[in-house]
Image 1 (tube, rainbow, N blue to C red):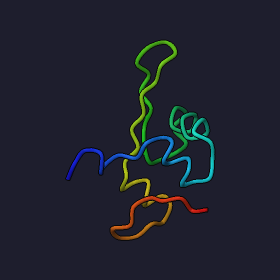
Image 2: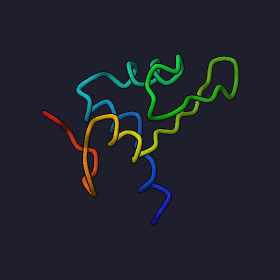
Image 3: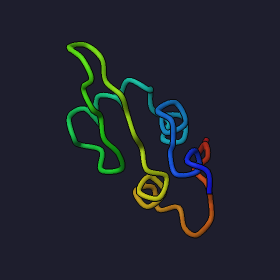
Image 4: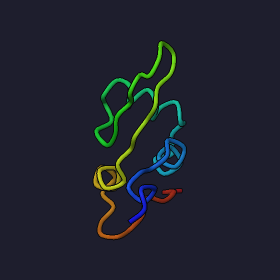
Length: 71
């Protein structure tokens, strides 16, 4: 399985949740979204990791379903 299949981008997570990418970034930075993490790499720069399996679990997506827009 390719590494990309284990990760969800911030923009993909935001679109699936129906929120802005900034909402996801701040939620990860503050530790209130349990499906990923934000790592501060410099004073004003963060990098983000969102686990596809934890993201799907958080949204209640079962089985092999990939995260997708809920709209």
